[in-house]
Image 1: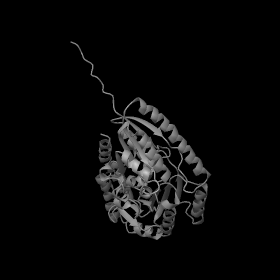
Image 2: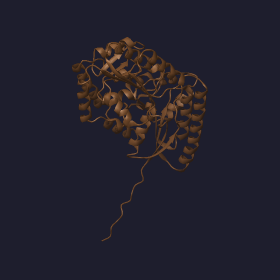
Image 3: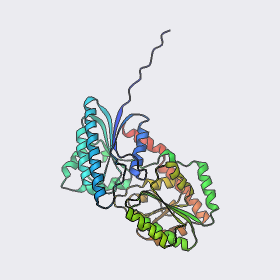
Image 4: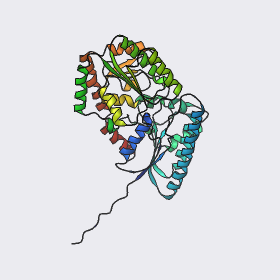
Length: 384
């Protein structure tokens, strides 16, 4: 009997031109890595990492200039390789995250023009809250129009961000709410253990701030709230996790901690890449606090990670956060730059009955809107 070998059909290929970890403190890099793993289930991925391995400082300085020059070099190098690749074969998909800067917008418009005839599906992912201003500027409207013409879809992380960006036809706009990587998913047993632990804390709270240590992310507002709660005897530990963008800001923060007698309370951890260590912070946190007013904010992934871990979230009514946090349901929304509002939000939510209900609602809201399964299905469908 003759056995016929089944022919194996080659898989379609997707080019990803994006920032990948490290560092793991950047939501964009984490999402790109997660998307790469998901798309690899169905496609062969050709990835080009244009990350220097560092975050851009907020302030304009020599380090920022050096980082931008290095990034430009990486983009040019990547595009030479991509051009050689698409000359040889037809590529099914092209994935890119477009930034919130005018220079990046023009660069990406040119890149999409270069790949337009050789790639079937071309997707620009928008994760930056400042992008609406870039699309509205008149002086580079030629590049904007070409960008819109050549892209198959523009994918937004929230409804609010999608509505802010004008000029793109509705059929090219898609919403893909963020999700989180599998390393941070909490099981039912882990959630149960976490809730049992809260009842044993006796109002000695564990506070977690996890984001880049950028002033406009509100870490000083968290520190001031921790100081006030400590004076009332409510704090056991406050963990600050994230990459510092300057040594000066780190020294200023350490000085504040020392001068206010918080050395035994405030733990400064800096950048942590190990996802299991990150999960440990979520497993012990009672409240996650992110009072951000960062101008480029979109949909902070760390808030989703906290919701999945069943942690009530205290955050500002800013960017896409109100689409994630329902005031009084899975957390509290507070005004910007008001540490006293953070204190009041925590005090009104810390009784075991209220905290437990918020914890359950936090995880439920994650499962309803941001689950990994729904995210994977939608992402894969975009490239079909």
